[in-house]
Length: 439
Image (cartoon, rainbow, N blue to C red; front, side, top):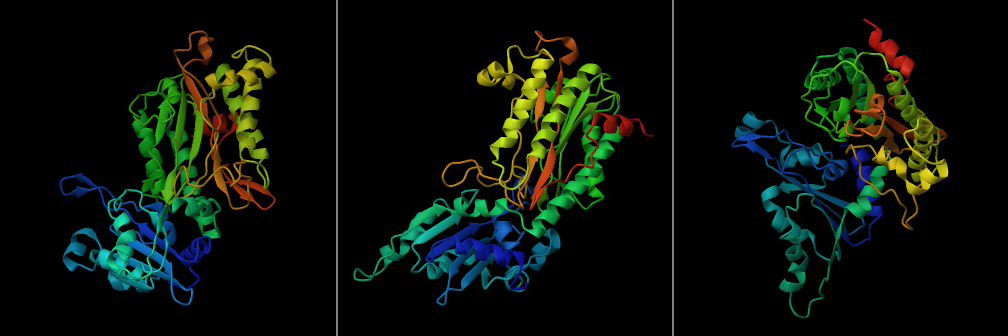
């Protein structure tokens, strides 16, 4: 692996942000059993993958500085095993960890205890990433081994233990060019998936069929994973934000909400569209849909370097509150509605999140002083306003009841503004009706 690889650069950035005497323990995931000897498809811990690129189960990486200040990257992994590899696929092994993944040194994972014992010497700042808590019962012992096992007149190392996420996750918020390309590819696959579902949508088809239609379309791009379970929700089902059953038959006159995104090369897309099952909006559907789209577009227009993160949510709420008042679904003046937050009856969630290796990607939304973080070039996130009016809202006109409308786009902050990566999925009323009526 070239010395200037993206993973080398990321490890350097991380270590530069930590004290000189830091010792980092990165724990990869283990493969989970589905039933008896059948395993789930393996999915690596994203923090581990971000820093190593190593996508095999049962691996641990260590990072610390050598005598000349150089970064020592030790990778412990499963050894080569021809019999196991025939059944379950090739392994990099110890030699591959060095030759293919750029490790300074590598060892059999069975040697973890002894390798840590010899590597953790003078360092006093231990940072650990262990999402599954695999070594929770051992970390204290590792940190105390030196002072418990050395002679009484030997200098003792009193060590602190800190979660690595506090230091690593802020680095993951800004996407480098490779990450931007990976997310763009996942979004492009998802665009085709959403278009395929929009074409297949009709009364009497099952939500599950449409979920499978999305998966089939993204597979043509090489995406054999989704970033999260597909949400294909017809009618009142859309009022459940994370509806996953996908088991109901679509009915004429309903709205369909589909929230689905491909995962490609370990990066996620996240796109939502809402449209009428019949391909034509009713007046009530059109009114709510246009209101949500207006809120989305107003928020997108705010995206540029220097804009505080919370301005996007506030913009969406302001637009939707005014619209709901105008439609008679909210009572009172604009000032009264905003002060009482009565709009939250229909706008029940925040309107965006970071996007990356995780669909709800990691990283703070506030700076170190507690202020809302300002947008910077290289940030990628969703904006997703929604209005939800359940069938149980019998105090409202029937024409509005039993629909949830959410529209979500994936936005990249550029040097001079923004780019809507998912704009090619039909999103205006005219675009949707025209697209759905085409043969």
